[in-house]
Length: 144
Image (cartoon, rainbow, N blue to C red):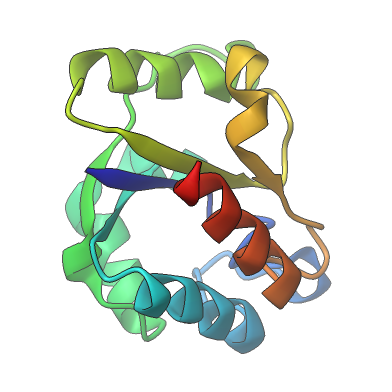
């Protein structure tokens, strides 16, 4: 199984035109859809802070922005502690430990707090979101 761990803010919801309602950048959405289209077996696990609202909420947000929500299969867990006090990489590592069937994965995020998983990270520019270059890098990581 191949997985994208997906952040929303800074990846799809760019800081140039940040939306509290979750209206994502059309360019960023187009680039994510390009990535998903080039590897149709990819599934998404939401690692964004938006995951606290639950998987169904996140799927509706994806659908609202023109992303096929059926590709979202889960969210990483979270603790009720101050946001940022636990590195996102810890949550991703926990999820991976529970899912040994994953043989390839990429993390798409605007933060670099991935600890030992940083070689799987495509770090986006928060103001621009996911770019064509980021898509190419993600595909390279997924093929390793």
